Length: 289
Image (cartoon, rainbow, N blue to C red; front, side, top):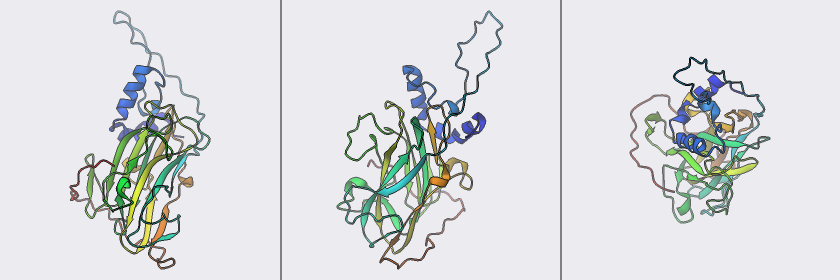
């Protein structure tokens, strides 16, 4: 579990996102005023009178209770594409289109408040595509499909899942992209979401759908990122109502599959990422999914 200083630093990037709206709304409603308390540690006591010299009361440390056993995972989705989605470690034919569900398992924590997911993918073999069109075409897009209610078939407005998308960006390549002023390599996904109107969440629920077009033969990998070794602003995290970090990287599993005939792919991904930073060349604008 992170202490307050470390947690504030690790959530610095997320605070640049509209999560500030969540904090404002929570402060206004008073329903969960400390939902992301660890992201911005402030003294909530009323200000002393200007006519009195009053020493501010110290902030009492929060008793830790959260368990770091939450994780995200990808699984074949129910949305119909041109082919069934491959299982993790399976295979799929070239030119197949399918959907993977991005799922969140809160483990023993009943009060999930927000998550931020950072992944890389072998952009030379697969592309991120619009889920709403996946049955008929491969429409490449630079967002995943946010899930506002947490379960297949649910209706937006249901009090389940993380209904607010805080960041939603995908770089399909071949050049680098700018995610809110930060340069990222091709084959990058950044998706963050949280509960604004909804109550905090427990159990297992869906946070997004990822449309995939398999374009080129080879071993495809969707890889979860954590810092270190990833950059500090690409650290996959899950937090509960008091701001405690509850994700356990050891429980995350990369999603791999062979694009081509079963057994035709080697074990090594064919796409090699580069650490060289150059100005972005991808000029696509965000498109709704």
